Image 1 (cartoon, one colour):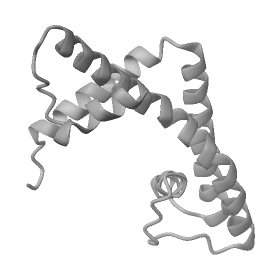
Image 2: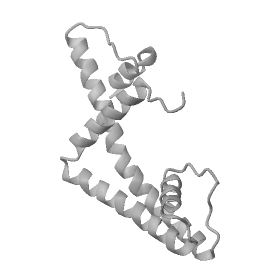
Image 3: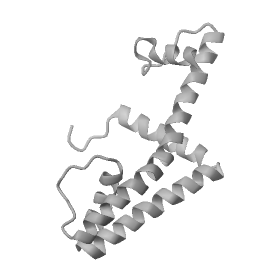
Image 4: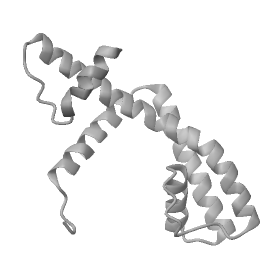
Length: 142
């Protein structure tokens, strides 16, 4: 695969950008975005100053820590860095999840509306992401 961008990735990325553009019109979502950027900035600045990491490494560690990925390639060495990381995870995880959650909800609601429209018009769902009618059954539970 190398450096090639696949069509599904491009489609997903464009859908994400369109969703982000729509959600940015909501002041509450914008506040969550600013809070998420501030949280990542604080973590990046802290790790750069206290741990002596490069800016990119500091940003990378901040993102993978709050996303709970934690590859293990970087870890704080100082006691101050370790204590900050514990507090950073407890506060930052909630903030990051609060930012990501509305994006997922918007995308799912949009798909439900499309499925409902297709159902009314008598069209069969062409949603290639609706494996085994899972989204349809989930919608019926709501």
